[in-house]
Length: 254
Image: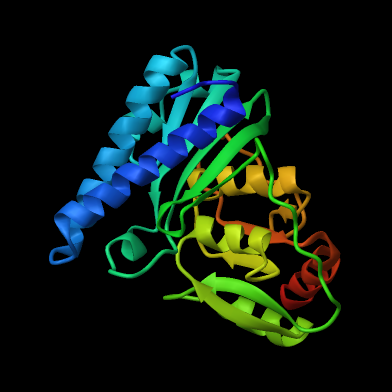
């Protein structure tokens, strides 16, 4: 692995973790989905923690697969640099044969902001990164698409789609949904109902670097490395759609 800077490191780690997950999928098969999910989560977490511990030993790490005690370590809150990782975003999709809408997230929070990040989409053969942010697709005015959960789309997003004239597109993991905004499969992703920092940090870092809109659904900035890692809602969209989506959300919450 050639380490050029934090952007490249995030991309290298996410990509390599994803390749390991593909090998686990191939070796283990899909006969026992629970065992496949558990092995994928564990192996990717161990790889990322070991790699960051070796390559960035002075930095803190917040991982979805960390123990509760590790997440509550007070040293993280005073650190200047914290890696926020989701070793396997979309475990359900990972354990389903033929699905490619799962991801690996690696982000760096530095002195109050996201400074680098990468989202690997291993089964799609690509990694989106702040090192080379994707070029946002152009938006032609008219009906557009909003990515939602394939298993539990929030009721308010269904109402929002009707209000703003959009179609809903079910996609698996949060990283895959936000990546779909950046690659032109959809124009927006709206979520409310429970997420954590590791669900959105890396894809939000890439989205912001690409020039997309990313915020909480009330329009406020999404902040990371908080004592409570809950970050229950997010809006990512092409910049031209942000104002109308935020206005629609406000109307629905009056």
